[in-house]
Image (cartoon, rainbow, N blue to C red):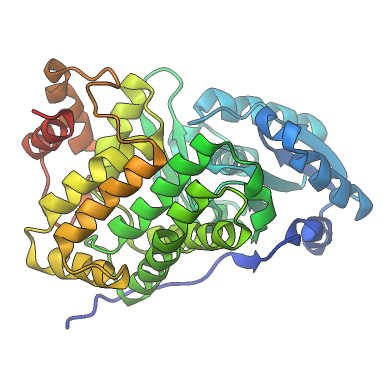
Length: 381
């Protein structure tokens, strides 16, 4: 086997276990923090997570300012509002508490607070020239793996174009994985984020940038998520399964950091932008079709077969069938037609999907005509 070379440097300290949220104040003080910004969303207030985090930070002697206006799929406007609050408070430490949207907003604000300019200035990789503020990422979902990535995904408020802004300096210094925080997730959030985490494991296993390190994380993420997702969906209080999902999502995020994603994510972004289909559902609906498409490549087929064997399945067709079954269990199997997608929209969706940055990492070359066919299959045509 020809092993792809890599240059990997772990940037994020990973702390995992029940009740580890309690350590956030001490950890913030280790960075010399005195004035912290807590970036979160209003939906989490009812669960009490922000209030608990603030308590632990204050006990450790930090003054805390809260920005709780985070919206799903954050835009340049969300980041600008967050920056305004942070500047007024003179903060020196950032805590991102919530799903991927909270962590992306926190990272986006960090770029602008420390390096100035506009979000579009950091679209790409390595555009920040100055050091950034210490970031502690605390996921309350088991999905994006953003806590283990150096990228902020921010949409342009006007055009809805998703900008991936990546820089080693943007990575969280610490990620706190406390599975107790995920117990409060609504069932639909659990389903959408769980499918997303599983998709990350499947996509990273076959990308062009795949290497021995990313493969290790992809396989372990897949093993954890595949074994736990159905359990969590059937029993939301299964803490052991919740723990496996949260750790699996973080490992899948680490795999993304080292190998990027592929065509399923490229195909999902236009569906979210034009039809408001939740990211996890959009990715989940496209993933079986993309696996089928990529499996025509012998090396990708063998990588998918590795995953199938990990799951106790006989072949890649079994893997595709199982991914569809999990969509059913998650209640996300609705076809694109039921979600409002019309056949005459496919050329535009396909053109946009082909321009997505992750398309370039797909193991098989994928162009607009391929995406149009993938969408047509998902539409049942």
